[in-house]
Image 1: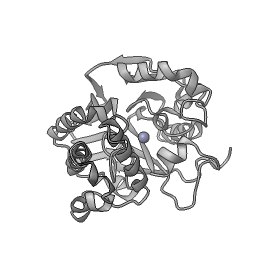
Image 2 (image 1 turned 90 degrees about the horizontal axis):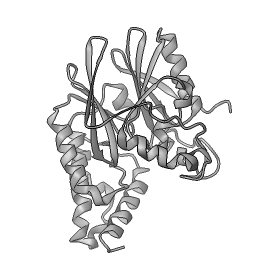
Image 3 (image 1 turned 135 degrees about the vertical axis):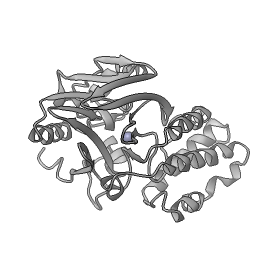
Image 4 (image 1 turned 30 degrees about the vertical axis):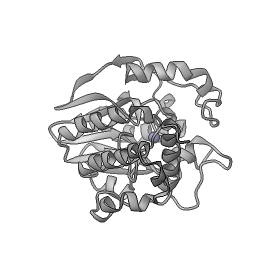
Length: 299
Ligand SMILES: [Zn+2]
């Protein structure tokens, strides 16, 4: 399976914070046939993160394959890390697939993430949940929290905050002293991936909670590599996400607007440099619109 990590790039957006980025590579596919790695992750670009203090690392998501997890581990070991703690941003496969490289380490997640994974474990391990590739073994959380969990990590505070944005089991990492928010899939560039339109109102409220933290840097899992490598997005990406969710929610009253091109919907945020155009998100948008119309009974 040589070559699975051939496009993995390692950035250091902030001291002691590493981003492991794969995808957004023209013409490159992870596998020939249809598969969840290319569709939801490599095609859009995916970054997962590790925060290092001395010999310890907090590994925030483990990327798209065991080989990616192993490459992350090797890189951290080269930095002198010997203690690993994994934290899951949510249960989706592109965020948990590499954890077998950290087998035996503590894996922290919120209770909803733990339940989602446990429920789907057999299907995920046999490659029948989202199709291939299977994740076997799927590593389940070993420590579960709800709401907030504060960790003193080296000389900095790391707060895990549960939210319902993109999925009902998000965990974001907030580093208050440096005003860095590791946002998982709660925001994306260009647009959020909608799986649960029934929760739009909660998504908007919880995005308000993230904005209220007033982060200086937002680093999410799906975004432009050069922006993440350069330190991350401005907090306005949270508001841009809300604007897009409100546009989708507006389809309840005005379903005839469904054919508006994505570029027009987010034009102001593109012009302001808050978002950066990436064409493959047009497919995500079409899917978001379909799911939203179906939920509102216009489907
Ligand atoms: Zn994802």
